[in-house]
Image (cartoon, rainbow, N blue to C red):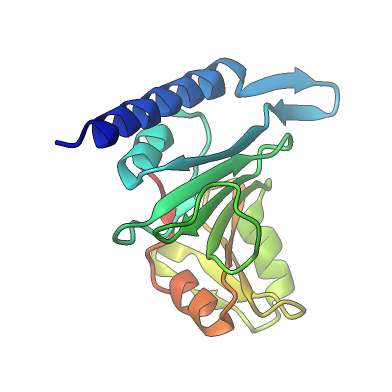
Amino acid sequence: MNRRVVVLGALVALALAGGVIAWLVTRTQSSPNGSVAAPVKPVALSASGLAKLGRLVGQPIYWAGPQKDYLYELKRTGDGSVYVRYLPPGVNAGAKGHEYMIIATYPFPHALAALAKVADGRRIKLPGGGLALVDEKHSTSVHLAFPGIDYQVEVYDPSPARALAVASSGRVRPAR
């Protein structure tokens, strides 16, 4: 095996382990206005790394499953929102642009009821009792909510047809 590949693999594994530890140690801090999360800058993960992280953290990380040869850029903001951006071969974490699919997970109490309230007959039923709604102003985004989950999920893709297809496919689930 090429020495560079081994070294690169070891560095990626070390970065993933460090990121997971940092996430777990600083994942939330209580504040007077509610819960505040420690931000995580964009980091590239493999499908197995994202699944492992999804099993370890205290909040769901939604995604649409693996795609061959893709990396998954994970980013978390201070409000606890998590973004998983699908990066094709040759694209590094932190790359500029909006030409890649993103699955976002936003803390949102009673997300399903709130989404149902604004759906006005435009709702798309999802497996397991979930609901999807295409954003009227931005057809490249589809919002999802699921029973008993206090998070709203957004599927963004530069192609409105692909965003809708992925959102309604039943593949959007927590990484595990």
